[in-house]
Length: 130
Length: 89
Image 1 (cartoon, each protein chain N blue to C red):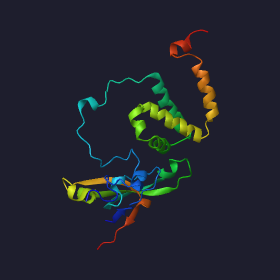
Image 2: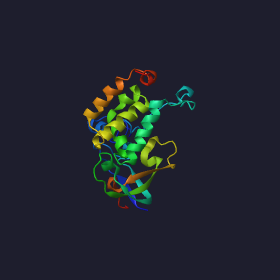
Image 3: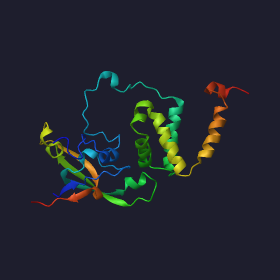
Image 4: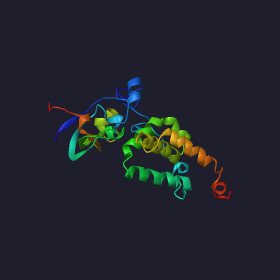
């Protein structure tokens, strides 16, 4: 019986609450087309590398664990998987864990974001002499 | 080998037990030692060390009549608090 309790076809509210969107093992799925395969030539932009560095530093300093990052990624919900890029989701997870871990406050973050935005829209603007 | 059932629990929140294995019966293939509880680590609270087991299921255990190869096996690493013993009948 495939519509039994705890099968992927169980659509009861309890099951949907307990089975978070990332927990997709057992779902039906079609073939993967060549277009869907990862582009191995993809180069990372500077901000993406910085997100990665921030994750490593925050983890090394004990502000969070991989489990804390996973929890926030799961909390973002299925829509985030469709609408945000990989590192956009990562920075959401790293930021929330850093705030929860006491690295800085939301107010600190707001002040810093205003400061950075004032430098200009591009890295070129930011580097230009005032 | 110890036969176990994965508890059919559905708490909201971060857990590492795949939903499609909950309620399924397998055997403990080996015990892997203890590791800090990821369900606590995920929320930044004190995590106690919990035993982790590698549990082996047959495809027929997991998918019943829908299994294409019923005797193929699948191993999953599951924390002890998600397992309950199944007595041999």
